[in-house]
Length: 456
Image 1 (tube, rainbow, N blue to C red):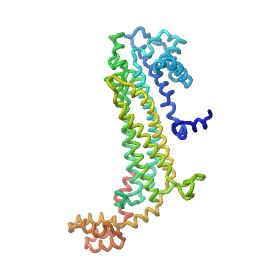
Image 2: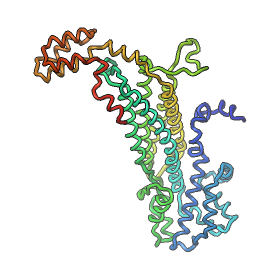
Image 3: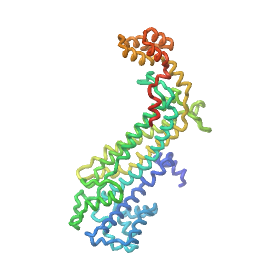
Image 4: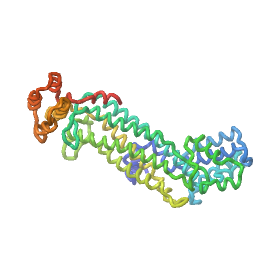
């Protein structure tokens, strides 16, 4: 089957229509990615046993033998994963198949005598939880690179439009003016905050046996500090964080924390997608046309905001998956049940839809143009927004019922420049206050919005 046919027959758009967008995630979250990391964990555990003098039967390794283990982990291929799957077809157990594969390879080397120390005292979840943690760590690196690219483009757009006055809309109604750049800067700050939350997460992991008590380990070698040995592998070798108190499984609270943080990042971006969609609808923003593209099958004039719509839809799918995983995975009956196993195989879907969404938003940002004429027209059509500064100055001066006076003048009414100027002059204000208010226009009433936009 050629690539086009495979794409057309794919059950998921992540393996079909969007396959090119999630290519970097495939070696991480595919079954190959899971098996490859299982092999790496098994070999690291074997090496750690051999480096422990209190386990004399797991003899010290030569430099050449360490090289054998390193190459087996580093050069693990799709063909090797295929061999593991062949073994699994007989064992009907995926992790045991990895153990047998490693033993098969070691049988051809001087390490054959160490064969029974492969998977020594481990339960499958000792290997699986480590592999899953590594998958998530590596997958997050892919997402974070694209996230930072998106933030950088959004920050640059915020700087470009820092002084671009825009009528704000609260509750969908005209409100005190801001600038386009300042509103974009708000999103930049929100995304950066959520990025910091993501970067602070270190995935927890365990290697403490069938029910988390080192039962088998201590029955064979009671004098070994197994918790310290495990920590060397978890933290020293792989840079994860040891969870010393677990059942058979690592509790998955760390995965839930990661997925919750990722959902928050995605939600901020979804909020941006919807706002940009609205700004395009209001003609505050336009979109550069692309030669050959069609906006509608029947309306030739249309240039639809499809990139932001695509992003919004895929973010919804991503958060639906991530949200279910975050709620389900920390719940396991007593020392363990198997419901987490099948669910964990879908981690890559949440990451894949997230990555697809990010790329769509980036593409959309690259097409945006600013419609300065429409922005200016809307500002000039809403002089009533100056009711706020006028009544504020009146309050400062102790005038009677300033809010109520401006409410009577403006609420639900169409107010012109002349209406506001006439009202200001009728107030008999101190010269400096009157001069300052008369100089105000909706376009100049933007506070420190430009400065704020340039802070990000």
